[in-house]
Length: 85
Image 1 (cartoon, helix red, strand yellow):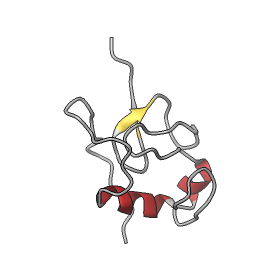
Image 2: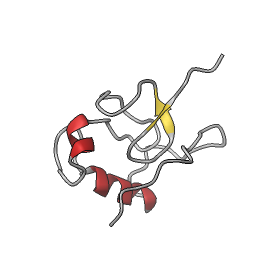
Image 3: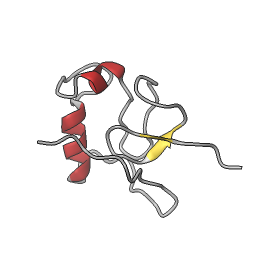
């Protein structure tokens, strides 16, 4: 029986075992640590991650902030959208 996975706020893949924000879980795909403060203030650097959430999303979209490539078994949340500009 599969366990429900929740969406990483950085890459949009369902990799977290608890519902964000603020779980402090690390995404196995983009290596983002789910940080409540960075979720509330997506342009703030520091906290649990070196980059801001917006920077992390940009880096992931450009193939930079990737711990491992997603496989056919990884599910991207169809409702997830990166932060704009």
